[in-house]
Amino acid sequence: MLENKYDFVYLFDVTNGNPNGDPDAGNEPRMDAETGMGYVTDVCLKRKVRNYVDLVKNGEEGFNILIKNDKPLNDKFKAAYEAEGLAVDKTKKGTDLPTELKAQQYMCRNYYDVRAFGAVMSTGNNSCGIVRGPVQFSFADSISPIYVNNVTITRQAKTDQKRAEKGDTEMGNKSIIPYALYRMSGHISAALANKITGLTEEDVDLLWKALLNLFDEDRSAARGDMEVRGLYVFKHESVLGNAHFPELNKKISVALKEGITVPRKFEDYEIKVDTSMPEGVSLIPYC
Image 1 (cartoon, helix red, strand yellow):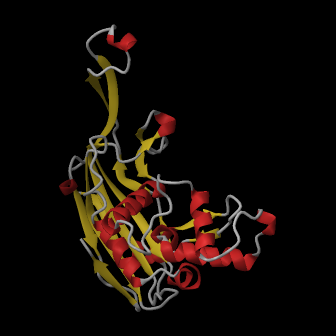
Image 2 (cartoon, helix red, strand yellow; image 1 turned 90 degrees about the vertical axis):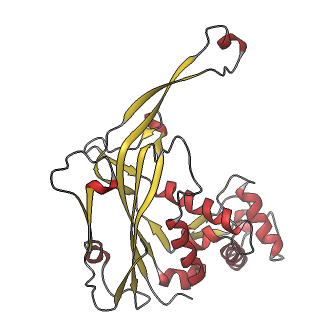
Image 3 (spheres, one colour; image 1 turned 30 degrees about the vertical axis):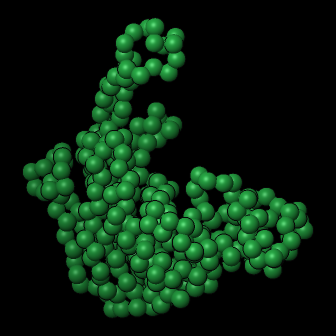
């Protein structure tokens, strides 16, 4: 049972890496074509949270991960029916609402990402319905326009004999951003958690830990150096909140320092935090 609504602002940066490639643009870093601003999708960040939870909990009861590359989703839905003693492999037309709800509650109890982010679980013949998650992320937008640098690389390992006969090396490229600072906003609805998924305070604490350590166990040569630069949590005294997020969002300002036109490091930015909060809201700066 959650007694508090939460909003938060999350800052992270990348140095000489690609934080989130766009498959429609040759896997180059995602960028708004009109403004030149970079962005990282909510799906990308949720994936990293899932990976962190899966790593630290390692299959602990109640902390399984639904959306991961292990077995088909429909098999997991069927397993929920079997665990609850429900008749399996009925057609969607033959699945009654109480049965679906019971299976859905099982999924919420046993899968962390369902409790947090929700899930579409209505596929196959063992529907667990659709769950709206209480935890929502925005896209992360860069503070300044990004510059994408296409770096030429070579490789010596060949995939087949025909390629090997063409020469010693092959040419390739990787796309990187020399430096960018990103900002994301997030929200946790206590009302939705209590009514639908059963997200707990323990789950919320785990989310903060995941965000603070998001990139430590997610290192990759392609992603370069990625670091968390700020997590500012607004805790409301009530379930439905005590202030609107746009007002709270303005409490965290990030801007280039005077004289800096092209940022190349985190220190090129100035972060100001207004600690005066509306009544019923407290600020928890984790870093």
